[in-house]
Length: 319
Image 1 (cartoon, rainbow, N blue to C red):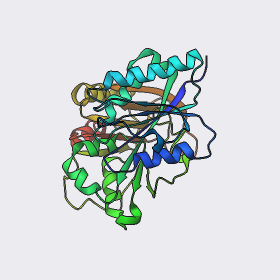
Image 2 (cartoon, rainbow, N blue to C red):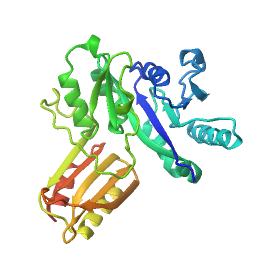
Image 3 (spheres, rainbow, N blue to C red):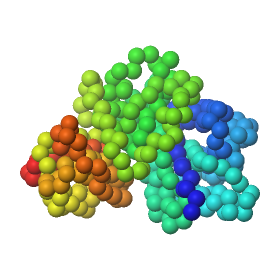
Image 4 (tube, helix red, strand yellow):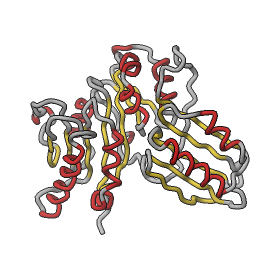
């Protein structure tokens, strides 16, 4: 069986620079053949000449968001691309989906796991969120959707920093929303593709680096979406971990966006890895703890209005 095709989702609010980044991706010297699904939020499709002819195929969806009225259309577009491969009409090595500024990435992500053919033949590699440094604070304050786009991300690209100037407080705010996604300043879409591709954002692995901002957001509670980082120095019992996670998913699944952890388990020399997006959750054993490592647990939960103290108390009670 052929390897599944990697797929990348570009998200971000209006004016963040997604199309500029996409143009950079398509014209960079990476040697890949990239197919693009372009999601439009207007009745007039994007001018394909803006992107050029570097994509194997550009599928322009009709008016509306991928995540709502056009949800089935995204599925159809993915299946159509696969049908083109099977007929021999299309050849591409990677897929990029550019979401409209008003799209919730959650349902777009779910599409890659909910359909048996799509989940088998595509591998969702990562979600890249672009944030406009000039207008971000106002957008994040006014639209929970803008926060959700950041919360789902595996990489955050901060654009227009050449205009906005110093962005330390904004970066800190983004890290409070999403503690597991690194933030990279980008000007005019110029960024190394090694930071965008082969991210492994939805592959079970131990790539978990937690940001610890030097600044606090200026206004307390201005983020409806934020990260909760739980760290425990003592091993946990496996059944207790299972009970806690089942309770979290049963009670707060609609509030969880992304979550990931590396756990130390009592009586087992191996690390237990877990990750999830909303209701989708998986876990597996990793390598053994090395002699120079102190077995410990680190977990990051990103969500809307999550009960931080309840989550901390649940794990601390068993630690």
